[in-house]
Image 1 (tube, rainbow, N blue to C red):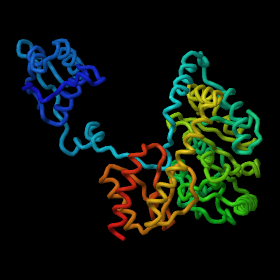
Image 2 (cartoon, one colour):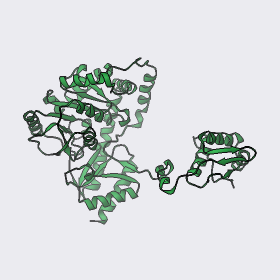
Image 3 (cartoon, rainbow, N blue to C red):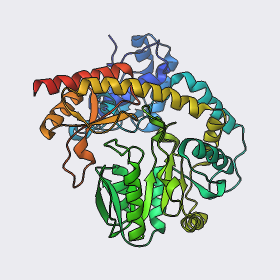
Image 4 (cartoon, rainbow, N blue to C red):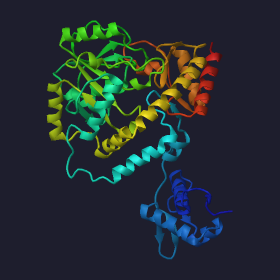
Length: 445
């Protein structure tokens, strides 16, 4: 029986000293080992655990360096720090990981593991390339802007040249830079809508005006710009029709307002071809925001903006001073991923998977709720009374899954229901979440 409640797993990838130091650290944090408590000698602990003494010595040395332990000449090794109190202990990394839920959100994509070699190859190319000696071009890496010219023409119907494109650190970053150059005034955002967009408007001190989502927009009086998701309304899902697009553009012209098009996942239509970008109808009135977060990884933090010339030039001039651009390594990696066809392959693979999973979700949810939009993208929205939605959400959490309420995307809207994501999870996780949801909905029918 070891003199400390720790165990060593020789089959684990984590080195033995790291295993031991982590467990002793956790024992101090949770109060099992208390301040000034004496620990067994490294020799005695090594004998108890049947490991080399160098394992226990290395672990103790690490904890001494971190300040968790202290030595007293001739007396041994003692605990040198108090643990967390009970209220704080719940937030320790150990407890957080134990209670971590599988998130079925609307923004985490599926990236086919069969293509990991291409991802690694891109980063090897980055590592072999000498980065710029100073700050990069404020417009973004020229190679990437050239690659995006072809992609935007092919997939979004946009006829642009490299100088029309500004590279951003994602949609929210591009939106924030855009807001800094707009005239004073309120910003309209769809309701329900993208929560990060609403939070960004508030964060820069602008008034936020709710625009009813998935409805014709006939007037924009009182706002200087309106943020919309016409290709796949977030989070309801409908596509803005041709007549509604023209109505929106007419309203913008009448109010001298700008339209900000967030084209976040248009590549993931699987009923028809992707809908052309709204920006293709009026380059002078619409700013286009695109992102790699749904086709590659959100953490890549790369997006792009196509804006009217005067606005584009103003953002460029500000960037000359602020250096507010995407990271050079991420841009360089995306160049390789686009050049080698990796992004196209990942998108095709994900589109097939989403089409299959969308049907599974629809089959499970249709008896209990009403779908809002068409089958598209990596999530679907379902209308049902708030009390039933909350009960289903809570049952899913109890089973280990985090599913968003539709009301969490609303400000003045009173729509209620669930938004079920099915991108960045496994088939078994989706099955488990749907079982928990439908079980709860059946019990409260």
